[in-house]
Image (cartoon, rainbow, N blue to C red; front, top):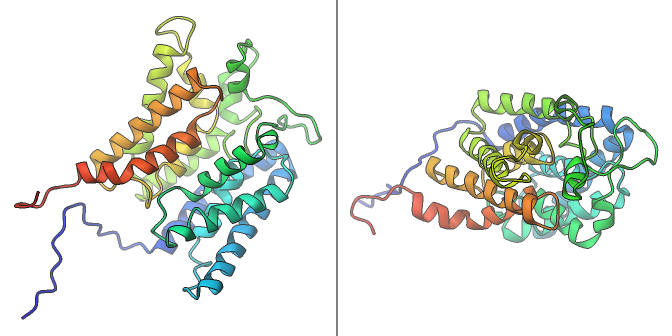
Length: 313
C-alpha cells in the first residue's frame, strides 16, 4: 500500500487559527496606533490610511479576476498591507502616493511571487521603499504633531543625524507620540497595546521583537554617542519605526524564519542593520531596509537552523 506520510523537519505547526482570523486579529491590534495617528496629525492621517486600504483591496480584487485565481479580498491580507503601508507614510502626502504604493505592494510585493503565502518580502515595506526611491521629497516631509495645517517638522532622528540638540524633547513626549513622523509609528503606547494583544493571544512570538529591539539599543549605546558607551539607546527605541517594525512587520509569518533559533538570528540581523544605518548611514532611519534585507536572508536562515531529520544530510 502506498504511504501518504510526509517526513519533514520541525517545527510542525498545530495552530488551528485560519489565515483570515489571524490577519483580522492583526488588523484589530494595529487600530490603536491608527487612532493615535489621527489624533496627533488630524484627518489627513485617516484619509491616507483609508485610501491605502481601498487601493490594496481593489488591486487584490482586479488581479484575482485577471489571473482567474480565488478572490481573497476578505481574508484580511490586503487590508493589513494597506494599513501598514499607510502607517509607514507621512500624514501629509498627496493621496495618489498611497494608491501607487498599495498597487506596487500588492502587484509586485505579493502577486508576482505567487500570491498568499508565497511572497519573499513584506509587501507593505516593499511598497514604502519603492515610494522612497521614487518620490523621496514626499517621504521625508513630516507634519508637525497637533498642528492641523501645512506646518511641517523634521523627525527627532533626522535632527539627531544633523547634530542638533534635542533637550526640548522628553521621553514621555516620544512615548505618547508628540513628535513628527509617519502615521502609525509615533505613539509607542498605542503600538505596545496592540503588541501585547498579539503576544498574549499567541499570534506572534517574542524572539524577533525582543532581539531586534535589544540589538539596536545595545549597538546604539556602544557606538551611537559622542564617545563609546554613551549612546542614548532609549531615544532610539522611542523614535522612528523600530517598535512598529519589530512587532508588526518583522514578525510577518511568510517572510520570517520558522524556528525559534532562526527568529533570534533574524531579529539580531535586523537590529544590526538598523543600528548601522542610523549611526553611520546617510539616512536617519533603517528599519524598512533592515527587515527587507533579512527577509531576503530568511531561506538561508531556515536552511541552516531547521531540525535535521535523522539520516538526512
